[in-house]
Image (cartoon, rainbow, N blue to C red; front, side, top):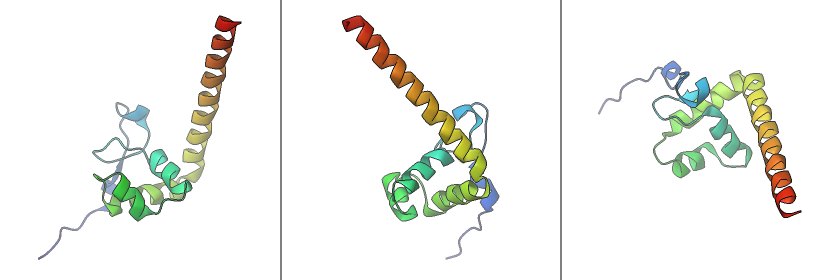
Length: 101
């Protein structure tokens, strides 16, 4: 049984309407950043594909390849998200403290 050849350039896409234009696995909305996050927690590509059952191993590897080819960009997005998350958390905690203060 023959299998179709996949152009790996088609596995990652950017669309301004999906996840703010961040690179995603084509047709899924799963960001490269999300795959990198799971991988940095110690999950292997195989484990990530199992956890996100609708992704193939090739898609997970494509996301990781995209990351390694564009590491500065993705790391900057991760830093921005973490900074914004910290800001929102601090804002929330401050508002709870003043409400109960």
